Length: 171
Image (tube, rainbow, N blue to C red; front, side):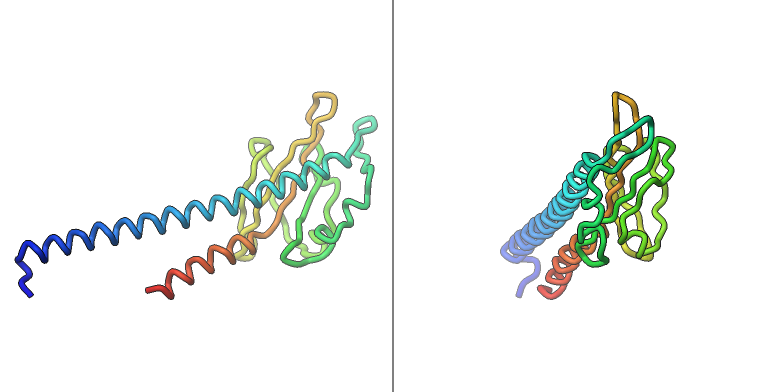
């Protein structure tokens, strides 16, 4: 094989372009899937926070929980892959209510800053990533507190791990 021939050099360039195109497309797919899975998790947490917010009323500045059965749903009570944790915080960001599974798990979630309200955030606890959504509570146009819903990213990490593993086994 003549390494200086035009045919060899053209084939080498075609191979290089092909490998780069495949690599860029795989990275793009990976990033797209990661963002999509996180977005779905954020939507789930936002809907859960909105549902919990609908169960909270105010009487003279104190919280009244209208439907306490919501707080004892399986996803808020048991510790498993589907667990959704929640906390209700007042306007001074003091904890007013905590889900049963969060009490059982016994880990500390830092208090949110007011800049994070209405958005999702991510923290690491014991090496696991916890996705948190902060839903502000308003009553009569006044800020009353925050409903904070959170879930470990186990399903997202499992899916992305499988994608990384399948990539390694291809080579």
